[in-house]
Amino acid sequence: MRYYRTETATGPLLLAREGRKVYDLTTARRSVESFRDLARVAATLEVGVDEVAGRLLDDAALLDDDAVSDPDRPVVAEEVWAAGVTYEVSSDAREAESGRPEIYQDVFTNERPEIFFKATPSRTVGPGEAVGVRGDSDWDVPEPELGVVVYEGEIVGYTVGNDVSSRDIEGQNPLYLPQAKVYDRCCSVGPCVASPETVGDPRDLELSMTIERDGETAFEGSTSTSNLARSPEELVSYLTRHNDLPELTVLLTGTSVVPPEEFTLREGDAVDIDIENVGTLSNGVTQV
Ligand code: DO4
Ligand code: MG
View 1: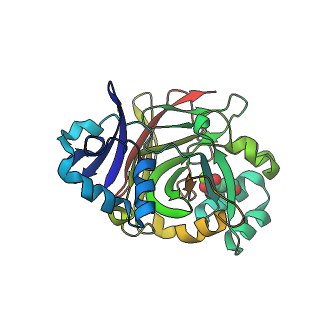
View 2: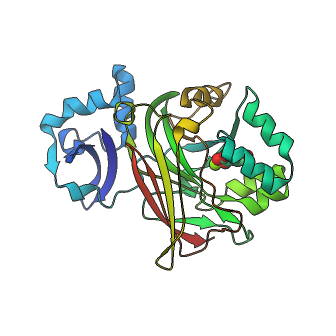
């Protein structure tokens, strides 16, 4: 199933979509009004989130398909982390922008992956909201990435993420990475959380990104997560080493769709990122 969150006049709702059917799980159980609530019950019962949702479906109101047309952020994780240089394409791009090939080749081939802190809830936006480009950067890109949703250290679902980045600042010096990566509106997640059963093999998904500017396509590119050099489990295992995670965390797994070097993201652009079996995350762009 895919899980969406929406705000209504009567409060937040957790919606579960199965094919074209949309169920309001919050009508079935008032205390289940977010994906976090669902994951908490699943962890307590030691079952998957789909198992818990399945038990609620009989008592849940059936809604029209358009109930998920304008969703909120599906999961508000205390922390968003991100892995880098997990695809060869990203390694090549980092080498080109920094002029320091060794450090990126090393991290691509070494046993230990690159994992960095990406965002807090206040720096993360959801579907339909604008992601940010920094006012002190001239070269910025969206990074479309498969996001892993981690509840108490276990993978409980997948989402779409945008690791918006300043290539300008990172390219000047790799030690500037936190400034290239962490700032207002630097991250987007959504539109839903797809359960592991719905996603199937997370390393065999089509991923595409389109950037529209002034009504025209300024960039489009696609890839497959089969090019991901490390499994989500391996990345999560490094993230959780000697690092007590909060209840809910999202880990972005790295990019392999890189616009050409002459491209920079601009205020007013519209970015759509689609991942097979998960959904499409759409955001505008604003300068921060
Ligand atoms: O090494 C810098 C970050 C790379 C990154 O964010 C990615 O590969 O997605
Ligand atoms: Mg990235």
